[in-house]
Amino acid sequence: MSTRPQRRDQLIADVTAEMPRQAGAARRLLIAMSHQIGIWPADLECVSMLAIEGPCSPTWLAEHLGLTTGAMTKMLDRLQRAGYITRSADPHDRRRIIVTAVPAALADLAWRYDGMGKRMNDAIARYSASELAAILDFMRAGRQAADAEIALMRERGHAHAVRRPTGRS
Image 1 (cartoon, rainbow, N blue to C red):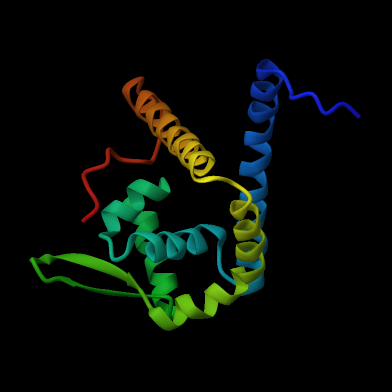
Image 2 (cartoon, rainbow, N blue to C red):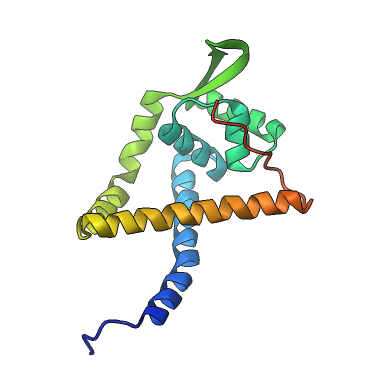
């Protein structure tokens, strides 16, 4: 086996081939976890988003999950009945609603990800600070590329449920 470094063009091809595999694995993990918990995958994605972003408006959540506001309302009804979220009036504008994840529900979900978290922390520990910065830059570029593609779909008039982002709250 050769110890010679891979050529740049081969690394680019390998990274390009790995991206959909990684995205697919993440999706399969979401589906498997949602089955274990007994909620819809999109519902688990919503709770995960609230865990990361903090309290949000239903409109913001709908925009970032790619749902209509009607579908978002039904999702929030399910999550509230199951004890995962609360809805309250926005203290700055009582006409608006703020959705918050229930801390006890987040704690109940968190332990389920311990194995994945440990494996990923072990992987991350192998990289230098500059390598981690490059990985983070690449991940952000991927998210921004997806957001740009969604914007192009909207501009071209293709049917897409995601509304134009208006801000987090």
